[in-house]
Length: 113
Image 1 (tube, rainbow, N blue to C red):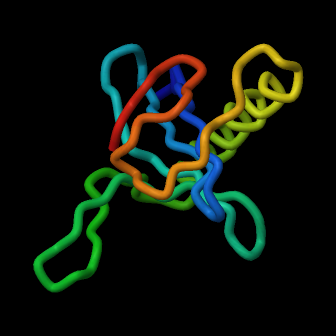
Image 2: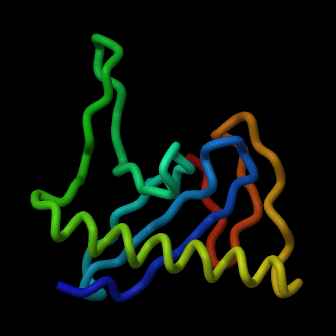
Image 3: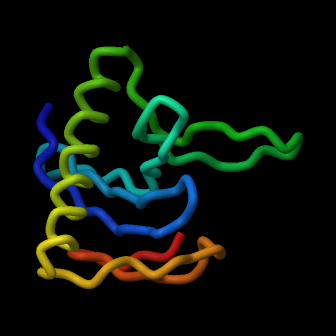
């Protein structure tokens, strides 16, 4: 399995730094991965839905730690490339969004989640 495409939509929020969509083997897309700034650095949160009891359940996720780390490393590397493009003036900086339903600046794709 290979990640054939990663699309990043940057955010300028306190902890939420962006969204990612990944395409696996040019055949299957997973949208809604979140790039989060945690206490020990960046990590990705898998797409999830809120359950009736208020907890969240992942919709899609790796089933082993090796796959999670492989995916996380690639998504975070793509995020850092987008940040570099902003710093180089190639793309506009992200707007600050308190409401996740608002579409922001994305370098390759505009999405609203």
